[in-house]
Length: 140
Image 1 (cartoon, helix red, strand yellow):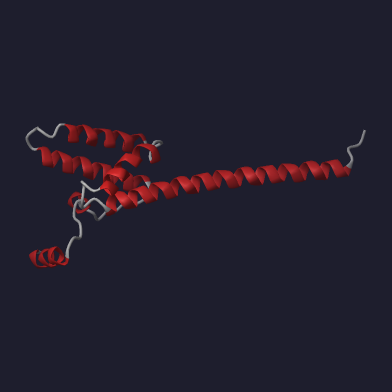
Image 2 (cartoon, one colour; image 1 turned 180 degrees about the horizontal axis):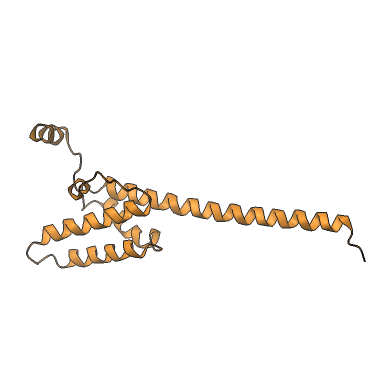
């Protein structure tokens, strides 16, 4: 009982097409997740100068979904939220700064950015108005 070469050709063509589609879908899904993470990180860092802005709050809220596979990022965001809820405690602003730095560092690390020359304080430095840039320039 010999297998007809036509059936072998059809089966191998179908199988190779299915494997190609599966691999392509896997790579596409992986690329899209990375793009979402990078976009959320970009907006989080880009709007950190105004923690009251809607864009910053939206980026913080997106972390819970976009970085859901990153346990350490989710824990840092949860701790940061709890710190914000305890705003009546003394030394409150230092704890908030530390929590935000931790979130920013873990988000950056998660997307593959590891700024080794960055001091923790650099995560809080922002560019503002022309006057602020000039004043910063002459203070250093």
